[in-house]
Image (tube, rainbow, N blue to C red; front, side):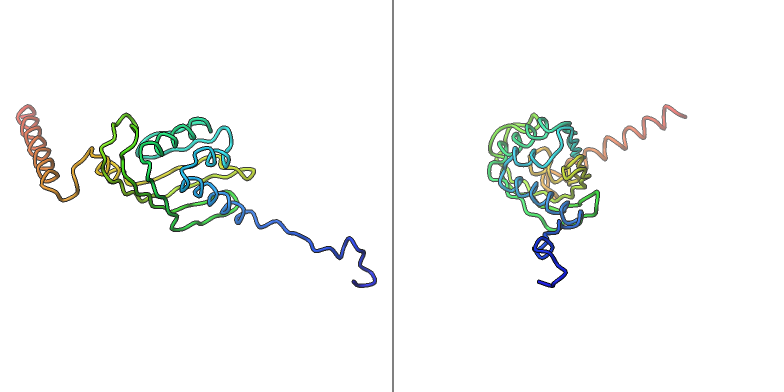
Length: 184
């Protein structure tokens, strides 16, 4: 210890990580809870007034609604696996790229009865962070992939998909012909 340094000054100082690092750690904790299918753990990372907009599906307002929404998802897809591909953070935001896979074999989800079909999603969440808690999240994912996986739409490039497109194109052409006749 230097002569001019007091015992208090000689103690090692623990520095808090930069805000962007704390924000990254927060969203990693959130996604660790998702991976454990722990809706309450997700809620612990959020403000009471959190707003999560799941772009193709719905908006969850408040911690209670967020936790309930994810409980429904975890019950519907009991083998859900979530992996984080990338996290980027700054002082107010964090972005997480992720993948989810699982079987829609548990309870109902979004009014749909379980189909037993495999769901594979890829998405990106944009978090807004305030006072070291998630204030808002906008989650973007492929709604078509969800609809196909849940059984709402036929598999991509399948005969059923080609038939569905053909039927839609026929109806569109008929409407166009009727509108042209009505307008002339």
